[in-house]
Amino acid sequence: MKKILILFLTFACAFNALAAHQIAGKVWSGVQTYDVAALKKIEASLIGSIVGVRINYRAQRISRRKPNWYESSVWHYAPAEKERFAFVRVMVEKKDLAAFQSLPTDFQSSAEIVLYGKVLFDSDANFLFIHLLGRKATVNPAGNATIDW
Image (tube, rainbow, N blue to C red; front, side, top):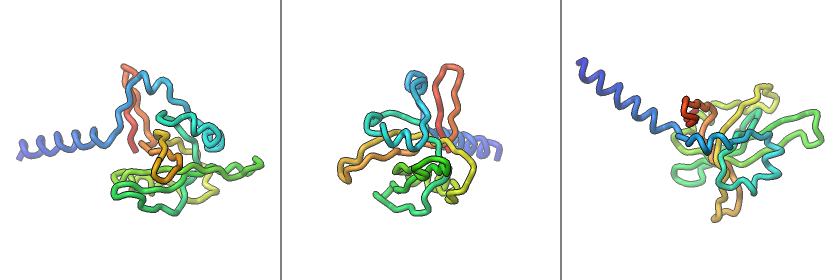
């Protein structure tokens, strides 16, 4: 019984490590966090880069774009600014969908959330999006980061 428990815990830890995204220290040191409106303006110049994006809520609509991918958008609400609402498109892997759905959908949510993702371009549909990697970043002593939900 003890061996089975140890084996189960080993597999659970290995599965958890696979679910997280590993980012090299050199790449992580260049990651910048943007407001949605600022990111929207320079998004095309960041293709292939990992970024942090500050949001308040996500769209309620989530559509299945491809078998293991879902499309939605994340929003920032700034009532004091001229353009009060700003959004960017995001793609979420099927394995991360439940975590993404746990984000608030109320535009009056006062919580500011930082999400990390990679800016990509879908040549089939001709649009830019952020492939979301997670919202928790843990940096080890060597400077490498692990991003997970």
